[in-house]
Length: 261
Image (cartoon, rainbow, N blue to C red; front, side):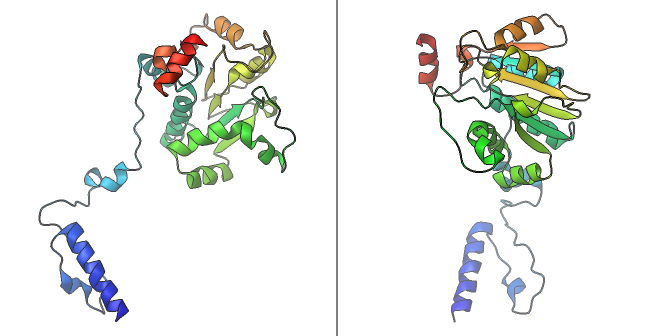
């Protein structure tokens, strides 16, 4: 009795969603059931008319002139320095472009790196293995990845080695070929660290270095981002994109605070 009521409810629900329903396809012994068709043409098997795909498709579009310049630079240069205040989308755009390149097969892996520097306060000793200890510092990169891919997909790609998230201290001595490298929070890197990171660039690779020179958690004069970017600005094949307050896409109060703080 309960099973028959459940079947009737399912038939009514599908009739509401798809319109005319051929109940002859739902006999007890039927092994293959025909897809119900809507006489009004509301449903189509073609992906271009399938709304389910649209929910998982996120088109990357710039929200300001600075973001458009940054996206164009990442498409045409193998080394890009993205400098600007908080909220301008530097990290998000870089990670999104990395995912786009991986999905299109232009690179074989994504390498994300970030300095493990505390923001003005000590959080003490953390439990767990190395990945657990570094998780709080690398969390912004996970957030950006999970916004472009599902967390299940991110874990699967990391397990296959197609996405690697590592602190800057583990980058020395490596050559990164066929990869899209994103160096985040570069204002917390010294001149020597940035020089080491920039020279990791290998064949068929793209590197994007993001940071805000005015928001360093290091002692005054220790950060090497401003000096490095000024030197590299003179190199023709390297793009240095400077974002401004007008490019901030977070809450409008963020742009107001940046202007007075």
